[in-house]
Length: 278
Length: 292
Image (cartoon, rainbow over the protein chains, first blue to last red):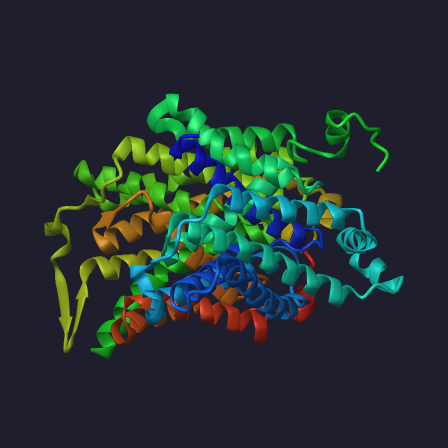
């Protein structure tokens, strides 16, 4: 496999994880526009552990994910007070805060960025993608998922039947943050150089786009959306400098014609030759 | 030194106020975040720039920038919002993002990605008052902002179209029952919002005497922060928050270095969201989030 395709595949894997981090939070009816912030935390912490303290990558990655998860829970609590678009804006602010924090955080290079990480093999990235995809798919079959969907559909009713909406919503943030941090750690060790500009608003929006384009009602939609987002600009090279405009137009077209995203449960069932019972 | 910084902050704040009002108009009426506003602002700047570069007077540049951005605003409403108005708020938000990608690409291809410079002869006139030196263009920026905000206030509170706008913002269904054409009001909101963003674009290109196709994202996000700090339920909160953020940003750059600028702005925004989610001038807390 050429370096070019390996790079594209790594990008797809990392973006899939980012998309799943948004997907998990979105399942509890919370839109996060700041997941690049969690990704940045995962990136910087894992890089610090592997470069400065010479930890093995897997251990560093798990510690980074756990730390980001705690941050996610800390962010999740005040987020309970906000709903809908106001929550989205608050998370946007959080993402920009984290980015600007690393911009002034001199010990990790500040605006100059941080380097010295070991490049990670493609198989390692996809092992994590597969593991987390399996985890999300298992979660989708669980009782907990039903509770999350109940809160998504009607939070008041979910609370009235005795669900702990606070725990589930904050937990959603914690889990989503951990997944975003894994994406960040893999990103840092794929590109072996990170700077705060990697984790701006555009990155958070990419995650959301991958979920919505791929299919916001199924976990594997994140994978489909990520593949589309990475490969589409490559396929559109023939329109040269109008590539981004064509991409924007296609994005609007997909939203207009298939607003649930490319993959949904009926289509998935058809593809896997199963009845669309669930 | 300090009075000089205050003047510079006020100029920047005036521009933020206009863009925040632009966000606020769409958000107040439809509860969606129009992510293309940053690019409408940038587009207005480029149109204004071209008009000034063709040696036409400033008011024409301003009107051309406003009209161009308003027109594109209406196109966005027709294609990216109207067919998706019944979907969850995330879908129209992303379709406006699609437009913002297209606009940035089109402007880059038409005008090039290098920053455009205005001839500096236009900008060298400065008024010296004691220790403060105020560029004539700074006075123009603040003056035009005051006039535009006044015109907007008159429109929203003094005309029947403005009353319809407020009725829809208050309660969409009741407004419709009372015979207000929600469709027409939506188009109006997008057009007004585009015009304000376009005007802000022309003003910022005058303020910096330069413009790039990438100015929209950064300034747009800052304007969202200004809207939140001012209070999303009260459009006029931006009048207070705009200058506040402008001054805070300029002071942060002057005394802490340019890198802490964003930290200060978004930090203030998070603080407001935690302590006073309805914003500085927002109404009762129960309003927050009900529109979604």
